[in-house]
Amino acid sequence: MFRAKYLLILLIPFFLFSCVDEDSMLGMGLVDQSDMLNVKKYSDFDISAYVYHEGDSLKTSNYRYMTLGTYNDLVFGKVKTSIYTQVSLSSTTMDFSSYAVGQSNEADSIVLSIAYNGMFVKDTNVEQKEMKIEVFEVSGIFDTNEYYTYSNIDCNPIPIMSKNILVSPKESVVVLGDTLAPQLRLNLGGDFLQKIVNSGSFSSNDDFLEFFKGIYIKLSPVDGQDDMIAYLDMFSSNSGIMLYYQDNNNQTQKYNFIFDQSTNRFTHIDYDFNGSKIANFSSKRKSSNDSISANDSIGDRSKIYLATLGISRAKLDIKDLMQWYTDSTQSLGMFNQAMLVIPVDEQYIATYGTNNIPARIICYTKNSEGQLIFINDAFTSESYLGTYDQASQSYRMRITSHLQNYLNGNIALSDIYLIPDSRTSTANRVVLNGPNHLTKPAKIEIIYTR
Image (cartoon, rainbow, N blue to C red; front, top):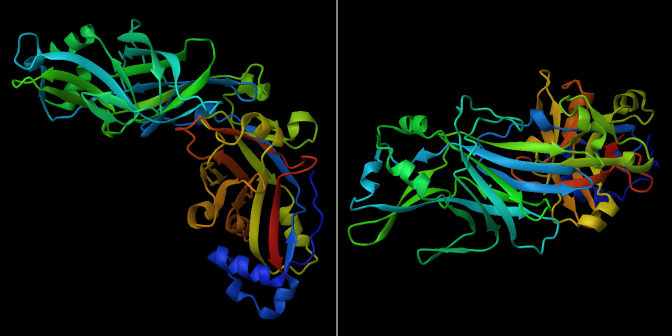
């Protein structure tokens, strides 16, 4: 259990300035001026922290931003992401026979292109990497709008295209003399081109989807090192499948197949935690109740592991908050601010730096149906924060309204779930100090009046 020393009275001018300016929800206008001398800070709460694998409960379908690739480290294990997606016509109807061999608009190539939105690598100086890309034709049916990390659809075993490419998320490309934003580009070959141009006419996009159900994309390392995941923007104007042809004036033109909101897509994710720091729940990862304790200050059990892509999330159980509130001998009046402060593990920063840590950590709670929802502060307060503070090397989240609602009986549980933002579109991860860390523990600081 972690215990912090009771802190002395804060400087009154600083308190007035910071509270009034930072958070209009705190209700300082309701506090009598005579009570200002009794402002206190309290952080001596009994907190337990548990780390869960999100895995199979993470919905990965129909997002704009997706991930593709593999990454492996000794802390979070190996994660591998691949993409299933339908491909839409960009027109209401289409007759591909006009692009067939011998026609005036005869097609000469067909190219898969997906715009990059960044990447995840350990060494941020790396700007490109040779990887093997494979594209398969989906043979099964996209029969729902909701897919999860474990979802998959049958595919033809022989790929449309398989080759080594340079994945370069920071490098612009030149296409037909135009310099375009960084994008993954792959010529899908003559056999696939002929399949499309010989397909005839389609009266609707649904008609086309019956003929061509979609593609499955895999990106794997070629040198045995699983250390790059590309971030992709599926809705970019540079994303789609482009059929190139020469018009009557000998000018190169193209017809676009697109990834849009009318079609389905999802990320499939494979996990391998063997040999990693979070291997404790690797054999039971399908249960939402399996966890690693971050309560003890023995070895790694004093750590909180957070990672996107369903790898891990955490829960904080504030055990004695209600008891302290009920039994308080301090004549507690009201909360002026409650701040959750969670330091980042210093060894993790020394090894991996801070470039790939989550940009923001969001606090959730559970409603009466057991569904995760934003805590009130994260949903309504512009000053919620949740971002990494370089000066203190910690994440700071304002949870004032959430704790007030719990103590007032408006919500049943004080539990807080920590989940990194952009959890389906990035591969970010971080190790945090638990509540019983020996030197810099996670804590809640409450400023209150009496």
